[in-house]
Amino acid sequence: MTVLVAVILFGLGVVSRITATRVIYLDAILYFSGGLIGTGHHWYFNGHSELNMALSAIFSAMEVIPLTLLTLDAWDFIKVTRTQRDLSGEHIPVPHEWTFYFIMAVGTWNFFGAGVFGFLINLPIVSYFEVGTMLTVNHGHAAMMGVFGMLAIALMVFSERHVSTEAKWNGLKKYFKISFWGLNIGLLMMVIFSLFPGGIMQFRDVLENGYWHARSLHYTGQDTARLI
Ligand code: HEM
Figure 1 (cartoon, rainbow, N blue to C red):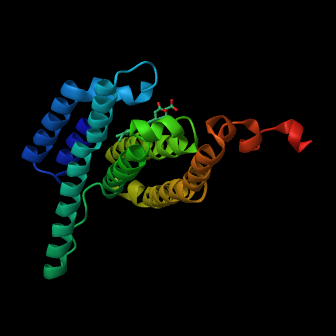
Figure 2: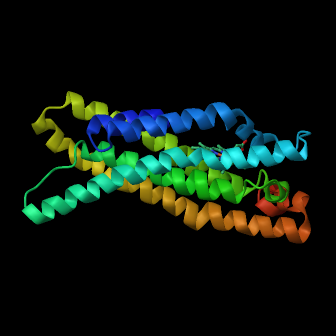
Figure 3: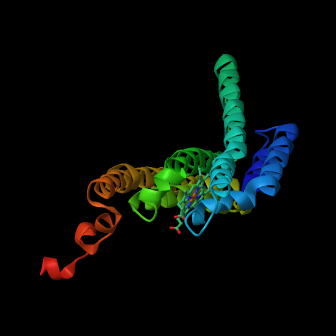
């Protein structure tokens, strides 16, 4: 994913070759040195040693670093371009505007969905009480749709822009705008109004009444016998 984003951002001319290459190398080093160990956060309780658990937690937390750096760099470029435009009064369009914005969404969700929400449940001591509750779902949705979903759409927009004439693109642009804001605001609302608070409530129930209780059909409201 980081490589794809780096190549696209370089192709759009918003990050330099050296930045893209550095980030790809950083990602490759992280991946080869600790990527496999990092996936260990999915099986903390399958008989890991303490050392294994600690290494899994550390390496997985570092996964988000390269893409975050890349996003910040690309955003800096856009800010500089905007400043120049303000000074000269001349309009400099952002290249492949909607592809760029979807890629920025990838970076943002990578930071919050994978980084912040992933980190929130990443410590083995937290995971012991939390794994499989709505806080995992909260992270899973924000990271999966936010990062890979938005990336897939960014690639679709990129291709569409390439095969469209200027006139056709001007007609299509508004749909991508609606799709960009609709998807991002929708995902944000799902996280803020449902998954995150639901996860915190469930976590509280784990601490007060036990893990078994917080995951029971009774607690989740799926207990049809009770409803009837
Ligand atoms: C774009 C990157 C990521 C994606 C798409 C992603 C996606 C997911 C998904 C779908 C799950 C649920 C798995 C399940 O229920 O079996 C999950 C679980 C989890 N993720 Fe991530 N994740 C990402 C990055 C991260 C990062 C960077 C961290 C650490 C900071 C992290 C920590 C965790 C933890 C601790 C769990 C719970 C363990 C489990 O249920 O297996 N994730 N992730």
